[in-house]
Image 1: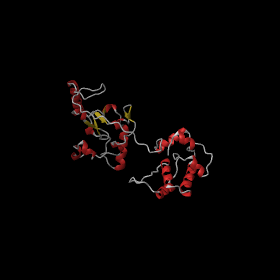
Image 2: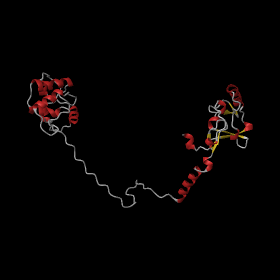
Image 3: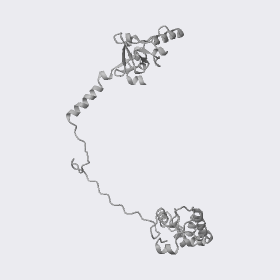
Length: 273
């Protein structure tokens, strides 16, 4: 098959739908039982068809007819006007140059009908081994040595973040939660109204017959004059008064009494597991 102006003028490719292409192919292969030479010339014009086997052997006529019988024409498949006329399809419009170009690209054809060969790839230059730290281009950035002031600043920040003061934790007076000193809220006993918690604890004592239930733990007070509130309990305080009972507070039925010494000295990792 040749795709050139001389051939196009004499026997152009025509515009057919897939069903019409299938009918032409059936007439060519089944009805007329075309020769193996004709079948081989048709193969490059149909998608996913080849004239050779996986071992590079030429396919025989019987094999080509069987493959054409299973083949389903697509938009890219090309049909000559002479083939369409033989199958009874007359006065079909020829393909436009754009349509023909699209089909040849899909079928991977050259102007002479042969399969395209991949263009040779340019040889990639070998990567040169750098022997110095000098920048070969203005945009190249290499690691540089930090000045001593930056190093001292990094060390100081590390010491501050791992110091005893930064890692110190306080026990919440109302729920027992341990939180970092930077996250807790200190409130003087004389300024915080906990009457709501007192009413809740009184009801718990009567209903559960547990007179030892308390609304807060005395041992968690700082100098016996300051409450320690975790961030969750502090959310329930407005205008120096508990407006709601904190979800995990002792007054909400979570009083367990004094924690035994074996559990008081647990590390943070042991508490999680």
